[in-house]
Each structure stands twice: as C-alpha cells, then as structure tokens.
Amino acid sequence: MVFAADEAVETSQPPLQLFATGLAGHSAMCCDGNGNVLVTNYRHLGSVGKISTELGALVLWDAPKANADQEEPFPLVGLAIDDDQRVLTLDAEHGRLLRWNPETKMVGILADRYQGRRFDSLFAVDVGPGGNIYFTEPERSSGDGANGALYRFDVATNRPQLLADGLHQPTGMVLSSDGKSLLVAESAQARIAVFQFKDDASAEKIATYFLTVMLDVDNAKEIGRLGHVTLDRRGWLYVALWDRGEIAVIDTTSGKLLELIPCGSDRVFGLTLWQDALLMSIPSKEAIYRYDLRPLIGRHAP
Image 1 (tube, rainbow, N blue to C red):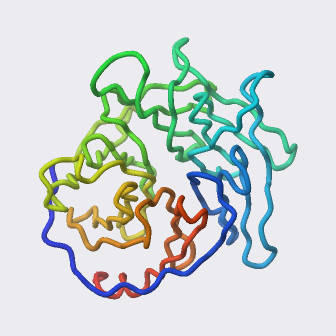
Image 2 (cartoon, rainbow, N blue to C red):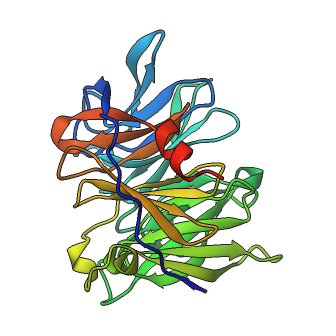
C-alpha cells in the first residue's frame, strides 16, 4: 500500500518555547512516564541526562569506553526506556546497544554484532511487547546500495534477530501503541516504511509514506536526511526533517500530511512527546524546544 497526501494546511504557528539547554551535539530524547525527560549527550558527548521541571537536570550516567585506549568522546544517538525503567541507548560510532540499570547503576552491552559481524552504525531504538528491543542500522561499511537493516533484540534468547534488510538508510523508528507494527524512516529515499509483525514474529512491509509526494519535490535529496520520529495516540506520526529544520506531521490513518512545523533552525534531530507538547532537539542551539500541540490538534482532530 502506498500513501500520498493532499496539500497540508498552512497556518500561523505558535512560537517555540525553550525547554532545556546544555546539549552537546545531536541528542535523542524520550520520556520516563513520570514527567521526566531523558536526553543523550547532556553536558557532554556520551552521557545520558534527566531533565525534571521540578528537580532540575543532572547527568545520570556516562557510556563506558569501547576500549581502554579510547580518548575521544563519542555521541549516543538513540534512546528508550523499558518497563523496569532501564535506559537503552545506542553508541553509533562503535555499534553498541547499551542498557543502564537504575538499581545497580551499571551499564551493560546487550549487543554489538550480528552473526559475528560488528554493527557499523546504529541510530534509533524502541521497546516493544515483552520487553523486546528494536533498533536500526542505517548502513554497513561493506556493500553498495541499500544495505541498512532493522533488528529485534530478543530478551528471551539474549540475541539480536534480523527483521528486515536492504533498507535505504533506516534512521528514526517507532512502534505503534499496540506493538503490532513498526514505522521506519528510510532516510535515503525520504520515505516511511510500515512493517507489521506476523504470528511467527517476523515483519512484513505493508505500507509506505512518500515524503517526496507529500512535499511535492522531485528528488529525495531535496528533503535531505530524516532524523528521529515519534507517534501519538491518534496515529499521527511526527518526522524530523533533519536537514530542513522542519517536522512533518502525518496522519497514518489517511496517509495525509497535516502540517509542517518549522523549528526556527536549519536542523532538527530528536523528537519526543511530553504532556501536550512536542519536544525537539536543535543541534545548532544546543537546546530542546517545546511546541504546544493543542492548536494543531484543534485544527485537525475530528
């Protein structure tokens, strides 16, 4: 199934509000269910911080070095939290899926390879039913063309499983609220692939949203890279148009582009939903900004 879209509504946008500063580089975000926001690369690269509107902000932990000789700091690009409040993040530079336990304060490496091959790059991570962990690998150093992949880390077997390969630079990713489908941004083609889980736990592509059609451009290169994505309870998908400094809002039920949210900068990277707002990380400003979603919902919700 392929979705196009009618022209998006053009309307004046409410101003963005500064939410937090102190980011280093490109930061991913997620909420912990208790009103707190977790963010990667807070204060310095390789860290995970917690931002609370009541208690302020602090660095929770730093990712361990990949080897004893490592001196240069490295960024963490993906972030998620499981039902036990354990924090998952991705070390893109060294291809590691990491998990921090708040009780022991220890960081463990869950996976850094598949069938003996080390991951070359990682981008986004999410947690699904049963605590299984899903993550994307945008590209591999060996091979040409579309060689990105989607994985599931099975907590029962303690091993990663390949769900889909031959993807065009899969970056942002999010599970549906019922955990039955997965939406993946294929950055090189400026499109969103929708995968549905089958009874045998494998994944099948069932739909595609083409941003080139929605934005009426001829080439995916005109859109540039796609960053992180998030999905609300209405089935509206928010896609960070990394190189355009905008966020595309797509109704996944109708396949229509609802609006483009300007971010006041030429780049936007991380996204997460927080209360009645959308939070976005702006690399050039080393900050998180808050966008009130209530006016947008009022314009489009039935």
